[in-house]
Length: 219
Image 1: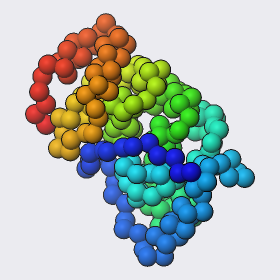
Image 2: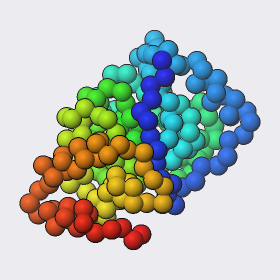
Image 3: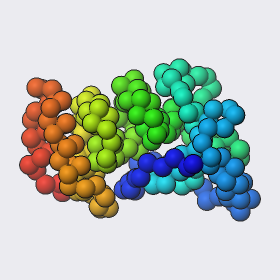
Image 4: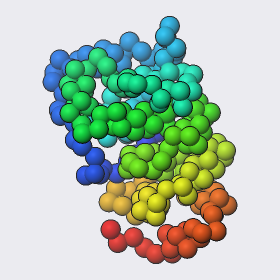
């Protein structure tokens, strides 16, 4: 099956823009997606749909990830693997980045935040997520805003309070649909997320929490 975490993310100008794919590369990507949609293959890989989030990394196409993975060990590999190693234009796009290894690390963090195994998501939140990238922050908002297990939402809430006020502001904008593109979270899921954020808020961040819940966004 094709694993899919439903996502609906606002566009941002802060990330580099990938080039449009050639016809040959689009065909290759489609063929790869069709080949890897039946669950773990002989290499232990599964395919995530990419809907709603991989467009921020390159294009909105499926991506293969390990079914079982130690996030820390994987992210310590040098060099890190490409997310789409068979697409030459994607490899060139990454290599042209000022810091390709950092871009790949942030891309893999986003992939692991969309993993179907909640244990992988929790490890990624605890050990790898830093909030230094708007795509990762939006994925965190999606975890808080969508119907994840309570333990995953709680870990996401704890992770948010480790980032800067600017990062917290971004996540609240997405979570509360204060941006240009409305989020698709249900009211009950958002209320649950707010409860987790209140419960995990450190004493020195209560002012930030109060401000985000009471001040309308004007960005």
